Image (cartoon, rainbow, N blue to C red):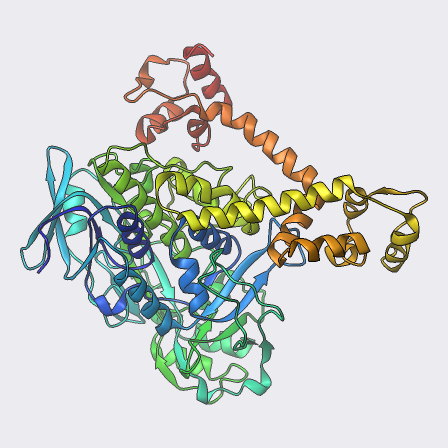
Length: 623
């Protein structure tokens, strides 16, 4: 059947579980991936897309670390867009529309080709815990499999309950049963549990839609890709999405069903995602708006199934159908299946260490929606970090933790561990105080060397990154050292409405002007000759432009990060007795005792811990 002892067992094969299993196995751990249905590995349960604002940065970081999400997203993309291109590069966010069926297939094929990885299809119903340490898992058939570390990535399956109007039934996803037993066992071990809610829109038949009355949303003219590796190529052809709107008539039809809505009649008591509300929540909260955008997203290259982004709902199916038929372009719509809401168990993440290991049970790790997050990208990044740290713990090596100034993944995990969350947590660029440093274009510079050091990112990845970085550094040096005459530059400056040069100056200074782009600089003979002689690609040109034009902002953020990292270096001893510090506020003492931060910097980010509380601790520690 399979071996009875493993280094790492991963429970659940969604985005978190798949990345966790790949990471642990690629680092050399003998790994078992257990899931209730092997046909649904890395299933896109909600929208058929990867990336987006802040989420695209996370996918780039996963790829830079040696994870699979970026490669799979590239190989199965049907459209690519770089969002926020009109803003500064800190805000640029890559996003792909995916082929849902091909995405899951590609993930499974990549996992099957991963050495050290076994698979088993069954429900895990319990854990083996011995002397406060994880020892393995129990399945619903009574089979016990032993392991040195276990990663739980149960997603929406823990006691999952699906709601469609007055109807409710157990399930972790449409057509799939819920997982039972684990929550009860964890609560008995002393864990706090909670409930959260998320939802999904109807899937409809694209043949029944009239696209001619909708606004076409094509992909980028020159599409890029997620992965820094040469395993993937940018798209050569793309499928368009479309946009339409709800109307006052649609809202009135939806309101007719509010008394039958589980959200409004009290049947759903848990909290849903603030930034991805259901359509009934939107028209209730934003009653002054007479329309809302709907994005009509194809589910793949060849399928006619369509995802109605923006129409997430748990209203009765007859209300959903009637209202959607009043949307422009949807007058003859046919449903594949209605939208629904799902409630599921999660465990407040303040019960974890920064490695995603639980504080209560040694060598037990949580990743994904079990920690209160929402989104494939947030889940995948946690899975990768949990898989890495499970392997490192098993082999007695130092943990791998990313700081807030090193990665969006570091921001995500630090937010969860130090602040907790009572509603589904979603990443935004505004959550990262160092977002100028954490751009999507430089994730490989930031993270590939770190990942290579711990044995995950390959030698090829490191060499490729170093070549790109050396080329960009040399090109920046060229701009700093090379002068240009007014006779050559002024025609370009005049064209751009920029003040003319009176004497020769360094190319760097001219390039630093806000309205001068790399395309403008390429009109200068010496620049063009340098690019051609060194065969510089688009990535190097973009990297050079960002480094030149934003050097002041980047330097300022680095200085701020260095100052705050001094607090990061002041460790709080394990088991530190906060009751000894009488000057601490009552709230700070309670929060610090509960969360047990590892450093003073982490302590300073806990809600309720004030600067004066940190000063008290600094004095006590002799700083």
